[in-house]
Figure 1 (cartoon, helix red, strand yellow):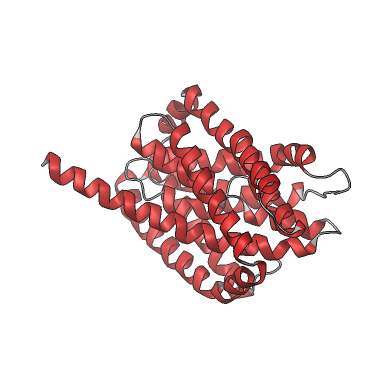
Figure 2: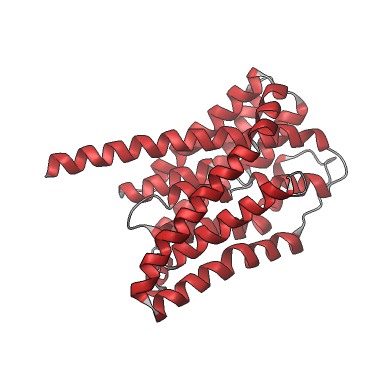
Length: 287
């Protein structure tokens, strides 16, 4: 977050708090319990994000002629799921608020502990990482878990009003998300221009292929496919940036990380629009 302007920081935090509050007001405790009981989907989600996506990243680094700092960024991203921007797209799947919350929170939390272990396996032994465990956990607690629980509490106490407030919070989150993308657009475009076409192509290939991994690993339910596809393709660039900033060497890696954060949003936006159009077509056919 240190690279962002004050305005951008306020916008992204507003987006997270409002979005989690909105999802909390759509999610009951019983909904989360039923998801936890779905061990098959849980296992497939973890395999897609902590095994298959890292393998994909390693394969691309070995096969493509990437600059060392770009290869390092791609490996970091491949091993670090839980991209917070994914909530803007997974929350759009109607009737799947509980699944969206569960997947995002699970991946964002586990990434703090599991991703460093995977990175030790794929990065050169000469690379020494410093993981900001305290800051990452505090961020998760304050900006994700607290608003989520607050929303769930409102749903249990005032269910009628909570549904209306949920729509308002979702609107605030959407406006903040758009504002954040506009506020950081110039810096992200500059980063994309600096890394070159080969690096951009590698990142787009990773995004699309990891999206396919999530889609295939989700099973037969279309809603689960949409959520897991976006969640798997949108990696945790914020955590990767925090790791790089607290680790002395490798600050050149920041540029491709910022570039990736630009590329994964429009890709998922197109994916979301396509699925929305397809859903409307199926609804018309049934009617």
